[in-house]
Image 1 (tube, helix red, strand yellow):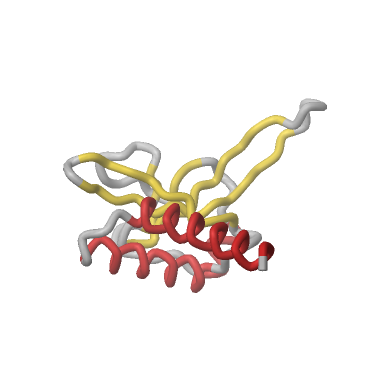
Image 2: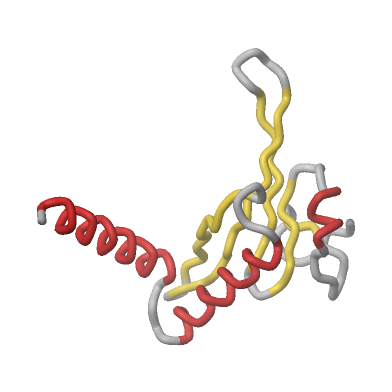
Length: 122
């Protein structure tokens, strides 16, 4: 894939979106854009015994109050391309409503934890 944009770690063919097949085939470490702030991050690291390993994770990148932020959406093993696009769409909706998607997720998790505690005490 050809590198584009100001981010030298982003790899993307001009005006193309990821496909389910390309997501499976991408193995070179880097960030691959799908559009709308959604990226597939392919990372390479070493296991404790020295063997190489790779991970593929979905990232939503956005800017809020002049600051660039990244929000992890989940692993490729957990979220399909379609599910990652849907999650990114929800993040963009939160931004349009003036909410920070990271803070919204944190608040949602805290609310769920509080409801679980209340349910256990009853």
